[in-house]
Amino acid sequence: MRTQRSTQWVGLAFIAIFAAVLWPGSPPGPLAAWTVLAAGVALARLRVLRRYEREVMVGGSEEHIAFHHRYHLLWPASALVWGLATLIFFDRIALADQFLCWLMLAGLGMFTTHSLSSERTALTRYLDAFALSILAFMAWRMVFELRLQGPTYHWWLALLLLAFWQVLRRAGVRMHDTQRRNFELQYRNNLLIESLTRQTQAALDAVEIKNRFLASAAHDIRQPVHALGLYADWLGSEPELVHELAPKIVESTKAVHQLFDSLFDLARLDSGKIKLNIETVNVAKLMRDLELQYRPLCEAKGLQFRLHVQLGSVVSDPILLQRILGNLISNAIRYTQRGGILVASRSTRKGLRIEVWDTGVGIAPVHQKEIFREFYKVPHAGTEDGFGLGLYIVARLTGILGHPLTLRSRVGRGTVFRLLLQPTDARRAAERAQASMEQILPERG
Image 1: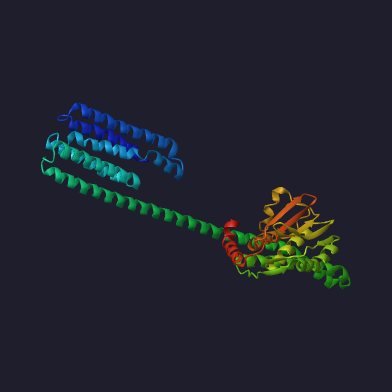
Image 2: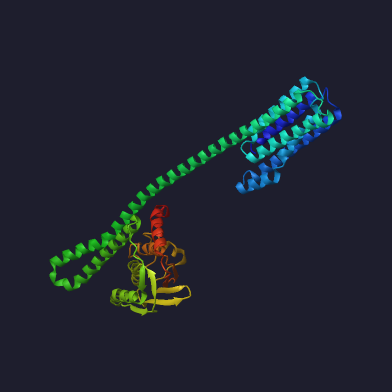
């Protein structure tokens, strides 16, 4: 369509030349009528082309297809008008002028085959209308007007026209197929270039992520390791302070251990080496095991730890599920200075749900999506501790197991995480684990 405007002006000039060839020996009335009709169709095509450039050219494929369906009859109508010229010149003017007319129609057919070959339907409709109309008007002259008494070359001319029609059809289809293959090859090359660009960017992102990873890990581990060195030196020089320094050494050791646990979890997730063991999990037993692990930490910080257990079971991975809930409880303890922690299981219409409530600093709405990114820490007072990995690991594991996680929070009032324990399908969980590993670089980028 974008190249048709120049061909339409050529078409108008072609009409004038054709009429000039016919003028000496043709009746002026039919010739004038045909000239006006042909010019009217050509101008109508120009008007349609202007509408295309104004309204459709910048649109998508759906707009182009709708435009083609709306105006597709314009091209066979133009072919019928050119075929109508046969009634004016065939066996009615001098043979030399007829030869020129046939030569011009053959050139028009070849030119149209080239210009319309990119749209196969428009091409075949034009050629069919063009050839069949010429053959029909020839047949009218040969059968009804001459009653089969015309010269023999009429029949050879009809056979030649049939052959020429089929040659143009085949040539047009081959040109169309060639253009289609070229576009497909160009499209595949563009996809390949885009894929290579994405992979290159993913590799660059990986380097950046690893650098950030090492920088963050080094920063987070430096403080507790440095503290361990200071406490050890202090204890070596003043052993009588062992009761005062020992708890501090234990706390620093726990911080280092906690960081390495998070880093190992992250490494297993990113490498795709996480192993799934899907089985029926007793939720009440799981929650009591978590109570044994985290109640002392709460009480050591002066916080209450409450447990509300609803009996039930769920199909999941017990180790990963415990890791998810452990990270949520650990976060709740870390960011709660007074009040307490509630871990509760409840029955809902969608299944069993475990909730972790705290009375901590809370999370502002602007940060509630960001906290599930790796190394992200909410910039609030009282949240400087931690490594920004716990909730990122939680989000990855809940996605793999198919346990939707939601949260509600108010700054200064506390936060609640709700984990819906929908049954885990082992095959789909393995697929999600693989997809999570494959998408990790684009997600991070």
